[in-house]
Length: 265
Image (tube, rainbow, N blue to C red; front, side):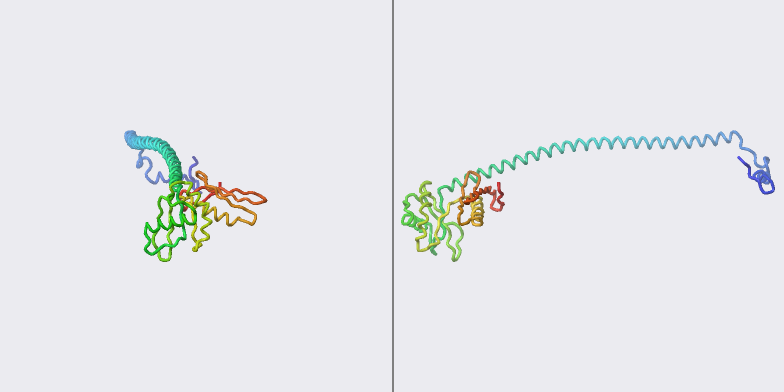
């Protein structure tokens, strides 16, 4: 290494060492002192290495625990996915079964109403009771629709009394044929003094809602040379709108509830 020299050619470090007294005033350390110093440095380094080793061991232990936790989480996720898949499958089966049950119940409901008619617009007396209502219906069917009074099992009004409102009457026939005969002769009710009396078939709420949608469709699409027909199948209401140029068929599913919207099939 080049030595520092002043502008006058003097060795500056040597001059400084001489001014401090030279070797007599600044003797070199003894070998024993050097050994002690080296040993102290070695001990301190060894201690630091041991501390680092302990920290590494603790860190390794923590990493191992984290790996075990991650493996447990992975297994839990697999189990959760399997359970979720099973739950979705069960939910799908329940939904499918529920839909089938609703359809069957709705079909049974309509079968129970099979022999029923609903009369609307027939005036109601202020103190009219069950017996009076049944007699009014028997007279109406016997005199105007040519239906034997014995074919009627029972008749009564339903709904809450309201001022100025004539509650409808539900009529149950003993057999289906009498119901059809009454329906065929219902046009004769136009000759009554009260022309607002008419007959309706008794259906479940879902079918009533579907038929209303079909009637609205017929009104909006009926023309002078067109026909409209509503056919009730097992689980479907079918509206057929036929014109002279191009027949069109429209299908509507019966809704599960009256609030459901009807979709084309």
